[in-house]
Image: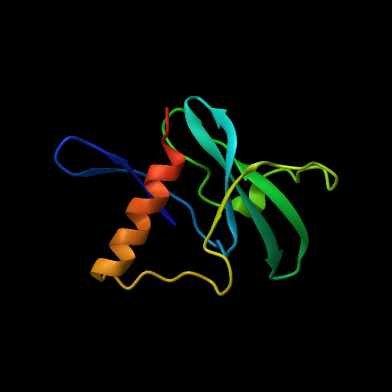
Length: 109
């Protein structure tokens, strides 16, 4: 997943995270001014868990599987995106538009 920040004239690359599959929850909770991204981690022998990717001031974590699991009973409020099948970007205009929409959710306020 790629995260961009909107500028007056275009978009600036901020961060990337690997090994993501939907859904992605753009949380109402923020860390260093950016929304936390909550994802499910599973597969490859990993014990399934839900984690929050928190912005460290420069980027989001590259690999969600290295993050601590959220408590199973914890309810997280936010907007779900990328529900269903894993999202793969081919670089076409539609994929760029989806990245733009996610960028808008992540950096608000």
